[in-house]
Length: 182
Image: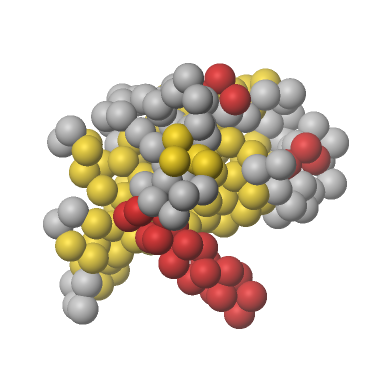
């Protein structure tokens, strides 16, 4: 459990740095930038934008299951539950059950840690943990995150074993995506 907390903290720090410098997620208001050539980032490294066509998972529908306040001091914290129906490349339709603890650092910045499972219609599953940073963009909360998939004995979901994914989620009626780092 200590390893998970340390990993979550490290991922959160990484995301805050990457998110605020624009080095990882180069976006327009509602789609990832699809550049003709790589872009130079602040630190002079080449940065290639993510393409939704390369995502391994895209969500079709999200169902909000509930939310509760956990704390109001020193920051407001909420626990929120969702379930997504989506498509996982190489597998097909899956359900993504998820729980997030959101810490509202300001009116324009939320740090989120989450956990959940991808489940196939025949009962196979794989667990994951995540850390994300959210901010309002065009009056919607947009979250950029990193997700660590556990190990599973499930044959169809084993393609995710111990993988790391990058995610983009927009609250509301917009498709969420996950890309696997290779």
